[in-house]
Image (cartoon, rainbow, N blue to C red):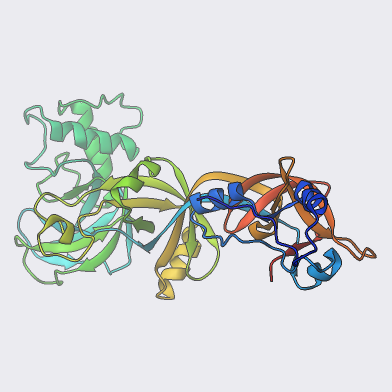
Length: 389
């Protein structure tokens, strides 16, 4: 964007080149182009134009026709802001293995940690284990080596049932494994057989889950359908940026999340996922909702209490800000108060108590964001600066 500097014309017969040169050396009467460019880069639209009008007036008279704004201390952040939502994430279906009758089921909203009862079949607890694959056979002494044995032993060690046994987390079902299984069964209050029957453990990646929905009913027989749906236990925020914005969401990077109920919380990028091929929306030509072809960025939230409060209030919308630069606790003024000086640099017209005319004060300009500029120099918090009304 180009900012044009012009000298106002004097009435006919009153042109005075020397006066015009003197005025030009003092202040170029326009909002600084550099600040405008920086503001536009940060996503802020600033209207540039001469802050003074009516050259035949004295400076004090001209200032009276303009407004003033206080120099205030604030924190600025440049970058981009996207809208998103908070929720518990996509639910995962849990199915039951084996045969029997459901005798106890959890309630929606319950949280279950690894090692705890998820539901009951024939009066026996079905426990949550952590891992990346379901069990597919009964595990007992004499069973062949396998990744399922290693997964079982990892859970027994993590839950504290292998203490003092020197149990190696490998694929062999050893005598020590039998002892650890019996300890686990004793803690559950069930028969200590030393073997794990198929269907007595549900394996999920999370160490804790939240029950989203229960689809089975007590008294119904175990079948092929889902028993319940679970999510992670903590709320997260999701946003759907454009492809060119994705590089700013590196896994593990920090963002600021503003809640609809007020206040902010820090967010950390957990994952970036895309829809599977053939399931894209309008952008993928599959006729889905517009924007369904975009990647989904999931953000872990620091303040879970504030997030739950917003969700209970049915206000899940959030604003997610990714910062390029930040300036903490600095003096700021409206961008439109800045003036480009003929000799280089920038200045402010500052109104001092007891002084009729505003004083021109040179300043250094730092970060420009949200229509405000970071400034430093011979100014104080609370000073009044002249801005176009």
